Amino acid sequence: MFRATFYALILVAVANPALADEVTDTLSSALQAYEEGDIEYALEELDYAKQLLQQMTTQELAGFLPDAPAGWTREMADSDVTAGLAMMGGGAGASAEYSNGVDTVEIMMIADSPMVQMFAGMLSNAGMLGMKLHRVGREKFVDNDGELSGLVDNRILIQAEGAAPEVMIPLLEDIDFKALEDFGG
Image 1 (cartoon, one colour):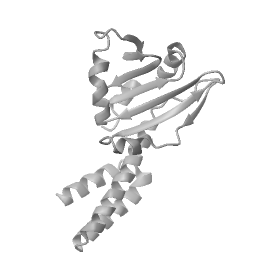
Image 2 (cartoon, helix red, strand yellow; image 1 turned 90 degrees about the vertical axis):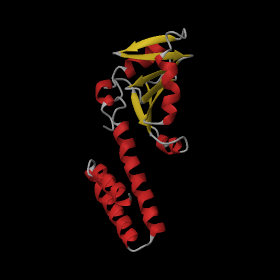
Image 3 (tube, one colour; image 1 turned 180 degrees about the horizontal axis):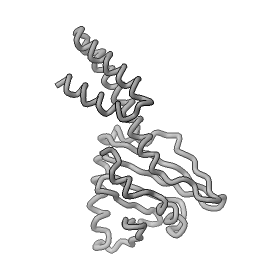
Image 4 (cartoon, rainbow, N blue to C red; image 1 turned 60 degrees about the vertical axis):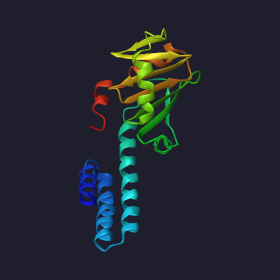
């Protein structure tokens, strides 16, 4: 099982050459430690390789956050959303704050997290529950007291907050939802 996990991690690492060297080096070190009987160090190396791969996933997800439109600025969040998700079962997360000098909007994406599944039932039945819905392209977003929440491909939660829906919706319209469906796939 160790070797199967090792080779699966190597295949994932090859997807991002910038980190692949460090990932493959770490995985090689884990395999060497395992072969030498140093299981504790092998596990440490596997944990580190997993962290590197999660960073790659987070960077990929952050790439789906829209650029700032004309007259707006975008600042990527300093905090690692993914680190917080680790305590809730895993997944990837990214967020950015957008400002036009008057309004400030935060857009957050969370993918492949058990936390997203908690929202899935509510979001898919929002209309029947009498919640206000907004269309953004082909996606439905629930308006919960000014926070817009949508679910892409039943596994990626997108939330926007901080301004009126008519201010946030144009920002959300710049997300490539179709490409986002293929995230991590």
